[in-house]
Each structure stands twice: as structure tokens, then as C-alpha cells.
Image 1 (tube, rainbow, N blue to C red):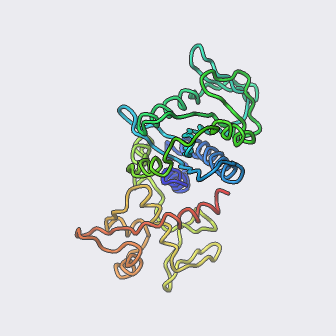
Image 2: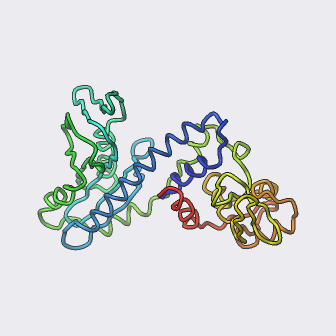
Image 3: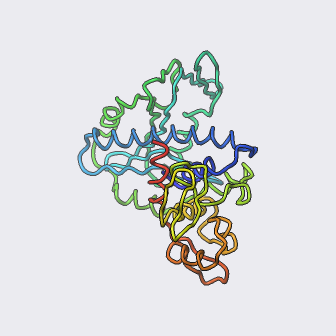
Amino acid sequence: MNDFLLAQMVAAERLPNAHESKAAVLAELKSSLAGASGEQRTAALLKRELDLPGETIFLSDVHIPYKEGTAQIDLLLIHEQMVCVLEVKNMVGEFYFDSVNFQFHRIIDGRREGMRNPEAQLHRAVRAVSNFLGVSVHGVIVLASRSGKVVEAPKQYPIVSLDYLPFHLERLALGSNIFDATALASKIERLPRRNSTHHWLERHRIGFNAMRHGVTCPNCRILSLDWQERKWLCRICGFHSRDAHQVTLQEYAVLFGESLDTQLAYRLLGVENKYTLYRLLKTAAPQSNVRGKRRIVEDRDLLRGYFGKIYR
């Protein structure tokens, strides 16, 4: 789970049903989860089945500078014999690539749905990687779902099923060693990490005041816990914990950044006593050099573990 997917999960959990963007956030999260699942299955299969000499490097959710912005890449494979961009589609239905008008649509349950053209997305990504690395780059559209059927195929790039992907890549790699895979991967890994969350929150008009505050009960998931006798307690299911607030701090950090105003912290955690607040924040969000500001200690694995149990 990258930070953007985590942000979508947090918003889906904490936005009230009455918020104007709740339905859109849930729909986008559903699409993102499907995409992430397809990418994870693709990477897992290749790491298990791909038979190439030497090391194969896999980079996921890569953003490469391109023209005035960046090109997002689902999965980038770097090997001494080839560099390949994988555009993973975990969709169902019948797929039609219109190479005359450069459009794409699918038919599902008898409905025609126009969508972004995966071939156009892949072409942009291939050009971005090729320009950035200064090498020739392959591109493949990957069908991660067995419930997808190509009726009209793309013309410029191959589209292959996930099961066949290892064989296709092994054929592409036939030849001599021409790349320093480690050097190419290092160049990409040195790129600054791109955060799309801020613009996404603005687009959906999501701010701190729009969110449900408090420390969420991991069992009930909609109720805020009470701090009693030095532990968090759920008055409905009886759940209790001393450190449940750490997930809440990570949720705030992934949405709004790791700098936390002390006054907002009272509202975020739902406590009123300043000594209680200081004890809770002592290690998870220590005081910064700026008066009245604290710095949340990043622990995304904690958040991934929390949401991993919810979105299995």
C-alpha cells in the first residue's frame, strides 16, 4: 500500500456519509484496491515464475518526470537484457481498443463504458522511461483478471494475460546483456517521492474539519474510544488498548502531513487534559523546534497492518 492508497482508506473510514464526496471517495477506493490487487498478483507471479539469468529488479508505483508533469507506472521491470513497463489492468468485461480514434471502452453486463485508453497510458509511460534513462524500453498491457476478454486488440503494444506474462517477457529478453540494471534502478530510486494526496483532498474538498475525529475502535470502526484509567476503551464492544492512538496519528500524517498543531491534537485524539495529551504524544509525536508544533514519527507499516486486516 502506498501513501495515496492509505489516504483513500482513511478518508473512506472517517468521512461522514453526508459529505458531498463520500460516494466518489468510496468508488475511487474500490478502483484503487482492484488495481493494487492486480499489481501485487503480477509482481508475485513474476518473482515466482520469471526465469531470466541474473537479477531482475521490480519497481512499483513509479513516477517518472515527463514534459510538464510525471508519468505514473504500475510496475517497471529492469533486467540486464531489457527494460519493460507493465500497465496492469485488473478489470472484467469485454475490451475494445479503437486504434482509429484512439479510444477504449469495455462492455460489462450489457453496458458500454468509456474509459481511459490503457494503450495511450502505456505509450506515455514508455516514452517517459526511455527519455529519462536514455535506453530503449518495451511496454506490455497485462490482464490481471481471468474475467477480462479482449475483443478488439491494441495495435501498438501487446496485451497478454497474467498467466502468459512470464513467457512473453522471457522471449523479449532473448539476446545479449546490454544494461547495467542496478545503475538504471538506482537512477529511478533517487527520484523524489511524489505525493498526490494534497491535490486529491482539495478536489474532494476534504479538510480536517470534515473528518470524524477521535481514536477509532478497530472492532466497531465507527466509534471513537474513550481514554479511561490510562487506556483506550470502547464502551460498546469492550476493546481496550494503551496505544490505539498511534494509528490515528498515522492517519492524520498520511492525509495532512507529519507536522501536528498541538491544539488540533486535542480534537484529533478527543482528549481534554493537557497532561494526558503530552503522555500520549511523548514518543509518537514529540515536540518540534517550532513552538506549538509536534512532529509525528512516521510508521506507515502500522497503518498498513491496520488497514490490511480491513481490506483483505
